Length: 500
Image (cartoon, rainbow, N blue to C red; front, top):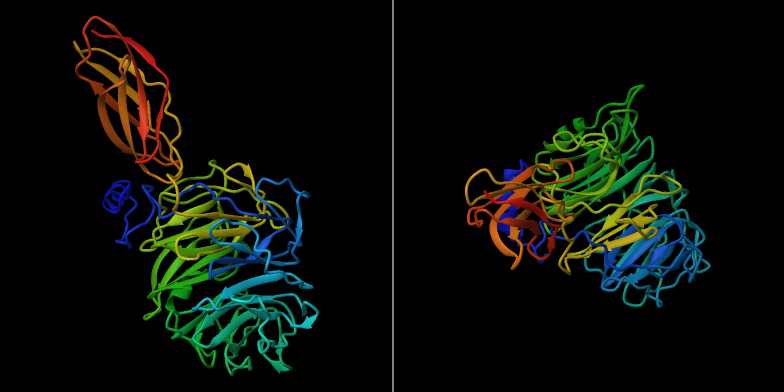
């Protein structure tokens, strides 16, 4: 589908869509197909991702990687907590090979792609001291000599704003100086900066506005700089002082039944997006957006099922969660939907429904995502993608015809008017299109005798009726349905009717 059709069909389905950039996808409703592309796998969770200069840099709990299709424990290559893969093919980059002595929790690329910065539990890289933060040159793969702050404990998240490298986690000291769970260094000199939000509990997520005018923190803290602020804060980019942020009220204050935390943050243009995960039945697990200039709430989506990762790709907000209920869309009983797409203008769900499963140790599924511009890399603790074996890492692109529609069921036929046949059939499903075209084919030459379009999703599959007004009276005829998504056409079986 082209952009104009996407807008009209989503609006008709109650999924209003803001104007987005021209989509490069070749006929899917989303900017990416729902068909996973070939990618290597890991033997344990992926926790950090960044894409730069034609490579995807991947960190996590893994110590081995293997080709796509290889069973667990076979065809393995050693990569201790960090690896790189070709952005185009998904294959292992054999030239990037470093030995770390601890888990990598977060990776970020510099805006020009010349460096990637990693944070985690490690204290050595290739035998050299790197206490929980390190940087690599993407052209050579070498460690950057002057990026070596001494961080006292885990670094969970990293972001870049201007010439500042912001990072957060569970630490209390950086270079022997008090920095409670959030700090910054210069990307030029590696020196510790005055930025000091002083969070009283762990920081899980950090991101800076695109112009570095503000920095956003998410986590389990209840104060920033000694001032009350639960789970999310907007702070000054040079001092770390807390700024007014009315939209923070989107996250409910903790109580005995609910503790909701911010797990990921994505800034894009004038809007900042947040992902929440809650403990307790009905606790806020969704996503929300705020205006960077005003600090006001733009929208809030109340899907249940912890959201761990969000990434903007080609004007759509992709999210990794284990959503099992989304008010206004699907209710409990449809299973867990680990990959979804949202309209960034209002948070409504869009036309993209691939899926993973969830594995050890978190049993959450997708945990992190990143883009190189027109693709989406997803990492986590899953072992299957779209039902096929694929552990830890997967990727989606805008290449190819996209997912084919589900084959249509047999139509129910009737003939109560002379020379006419009515065919009724339940709408089909397509993992990257909502609007599908239905054609009624009469047997023999498979002549198309009627055509219509309809919207369908996994939570709403109405029926459509097509009428053949040229049926030969007094004859027995067979009919079947063809469903078409703009690229793929799938035909169902025949039903028979006697034409009046």
